[in-house]
Length: 88
Image (cartoon, rainbow, N blue to C red; front, top):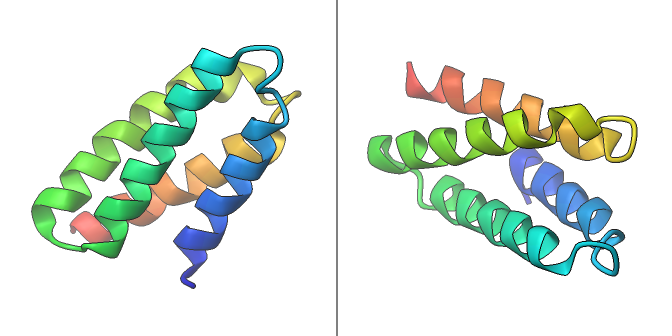
């Protein structure tokens, strides 16, 4: 399992703890994280672009909740930076 895979798994685990409060939002975020994981595991230039677009949107969306989901916010930042480096 790659470092990015581990980060995505950690995000999903942390986000799922809030499912009883906001099931539809949690499900949407988890689905987005799974898409990112799929794109990263099928690595090519097009998939890096797609994953970067999704992770950038998610990061912007959840950044204001960093006190509730700090691991997710930090991991999304890591994944975003990793994808930006991979893109070059």
